[in-house]
Length: 68
Image 1: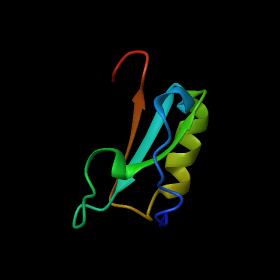
Image 2: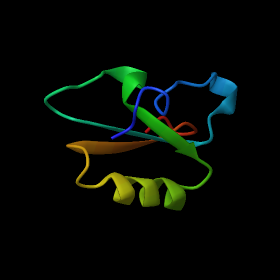
Image 3: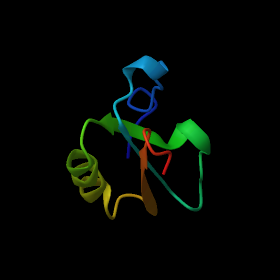
Image 4: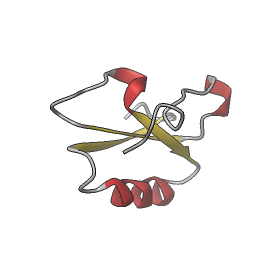
């Protein structure tokens, strides 16, 4: 689980194309409070999701170029 320092939100210019969010269903933090990290490639983002698999109730990847 990420601590508060690891979940610090950076200014938008520092984000890479793919954003990874994760969290617990029971304690949702909402919005960018569930932000984990950003990556240049979908493969890197999927690797991070695999790393978090089982640690959180859900994970999501957002592509900043397509909005999906």
